[in-house]
Image: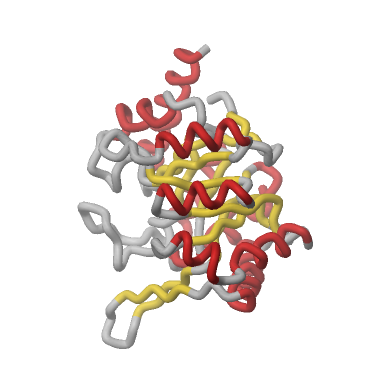
Length: 262
């Protein structure tokens, strides 16, 4: 795979990134089929294999259950080998009755505390990307809370190299052009609503990461990745999974797209 520049961040990312949701959480999910959480040894093999295949972007979040802790344990000794992305704003827990529950807090104190917990879990002094984990109220979060200012301060103090928004709406992502280094958007063959956002981001030097490029498992990986990566404005398509064989297939697809573009 040929790395792609991530906007003006100075970072280069593999065209396929690894989404670390499934290594940490298997309740309250939207995937077509359920799955068991892997044990620690399986997670270590998976994450090590991901880096060995040339994937250098690892994306996680506090809302992904055990994900941050497992990444910190398995990969902190290889910290220079990958671009590390996490988020602030959403936390996840399981209630006493077993029901999953997400809680969203976008005030300054909560965001700073979330970042500090993430750094501790990930066993690092700083992350490369710190994104607002929106609940869909993209404009409200940016305009009616001090979340953006808190992110900017965390960047200024060196806790993160770049900041941005993992949002849900085109209007929210367009508003983020004024401050974000990176956007994480949903984009796939069944939902091209963000294609204009991606194009504008490219023209303004804002990096783009794609989430749900396989439409939460509804689309076949090969054609879906080819569709996403054919867009030159996309830095990386973040794809999760627990089977290293699928990761290998995704890397092969990304390499094929890269050769075709050349």
